[in-house]
Amino acid sequence: MSYFNPQTLDKYLSTLSETGFVRIPNFLNEQKANELESTLSSLNFDIAATVNGRPQLFTAEELKRKSNQEQQQLFSHIYEQASQGIGFVYGRHALSETENKVLKNYEAEINNDGFLKSFSRVSQQNIIKASAQATCFQRNDFLTRHNDVVPSEGRVYAYVLGLTKQWHPDWGGLLQFFEPDGTPTNSFAPQFNSLSIFDVSKIHSVTYVTPFAKNKRFSITGWFRTK
Ligand SMILES: O=C(O)CCC(=O)C(=O)O
Ligand SMILES: [Fe+2]
Image 1 (tube, rainbow, N blue to C red):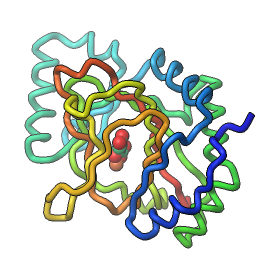
Image 2 (cartoon, rainbow, N blue to C red; image 1 turned 135 degrees about the vertical axis):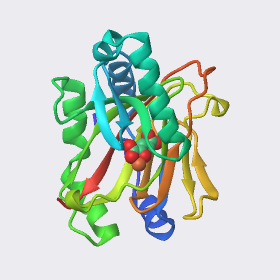
Image 3 (tube, helix red, strand yellow; image 1 turned 90 degrees about the horizontal axis):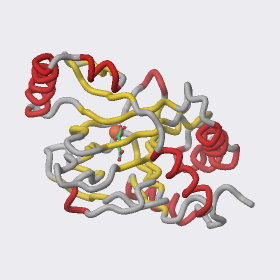
């Protein structure tokens, strides 16, 4: 059984090179997508947040150990920065450090030669790897506008593999693109087993997940890289 759904990537890759982004539906074999979804549903995520302008990771226990006052101070600092368009809060689990077999297997599959070659061809750059992290956005999580350019990592394309089974667009959590002046353009609502790919220079955000979101927004995200 093949890990990916047999489909021709070519038409999607031409859209990617013409517009800078594309979404491929039904990307993985259905059974593999279900397996990843149930893996993420029971995974421990650290909490990634921007503190004093720097990304920080907390374990859930570390946050719980803080007093109410410390938590309030931390979040009022995070929200003050966010009000100026800086920062994020969401759950993250790095695949480079995971012991989980299902996730390890995913990482190996997304790094298969065929993909790396296809993405090298479209970008006309030598893509040597795809990085990966599992993410979970729940109520009150967000990721403000940014681009994904990191020259030291040689990021070329970002990808988001959607693993949320049920989502309502009114719950937020949209992958939202913007013009450089902040005008919103395209937007992708979470969609199970879709692979969204975009040029790292595109400005984007994950919109605030509302307090009435009933589910968690699970994804595996990463970058196709030259370094
Ligand atoms: O989860 C998403 O849709 C995008 C995540 C993202 O922009 C990032 O991790 O840099
Ligand atoms: Fe991003």
